[in-house]
Image (cartoon, rainbow, N blue to C red; front, side):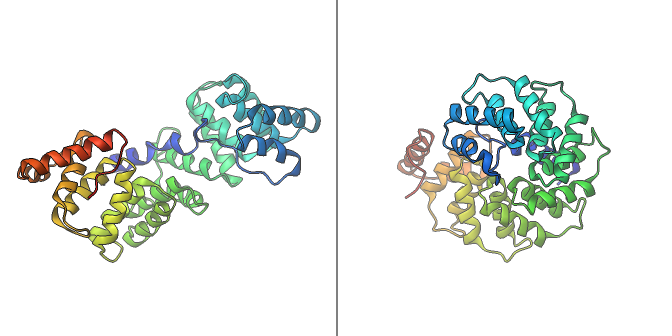
Length: 315
């Protein structure tokens, strides 16, 4: 993998891991008793209650966790009107008191220019402080900034160190990124076995790109014992998640009967799905064209059913 491709593969994830969004809240469970009710309400989706309790705790006790929770509610419009500026102010108050989650969340806002001025250097500073306090997502995003080479001189060694810190805290994106560095030998000594090990950990956490990379490693015997059946199973999991590369690889295995029972109709259906997503494969095109008309029609019906959300291609 070239330097550019590696950088793009990792940098594409910079705002996925720690983005401030309703789908991926940055708030994590707290041990402090005073905010249990606010956090519990947040987890149950009772945002108005969470807002009321957190507001009271922030005003009466200067509770840092409550301030961070208020930032989250305002950032995502949960129980209150979305207000990035208020979110930034609450995150800032908590960050000034050393809260790692608030530091990270404020960094993301600076990275995106939401509620604050877009400032990648300030984002990097906040990520660095949060990472030093143990925030895995901050360490991950800081690593990506080192690879981008805009805020800092490009430094794969520092990136690898930060990815490892986040990976050891079970951040799947970081495990995948660290595996890519081991695979390519950037920032660390090239080591296919270590790459496969980290891909395995990320795959266990449901990381789809890691499943695909691990399946390829298993199929090729790169860093692991060659295992076509296990590779096929991983490709299928990733294909069911909608990954077009996995759909293409699974189609090839089904067509050839490698690691799975040969099934040309199912192979054709997965190929049609992958092709619709932009994955071209002349070999599979020829395979599909050579099928009897009834089998081609069956493959198309299965692909259409998948697109309609009815069922996965299968026998």
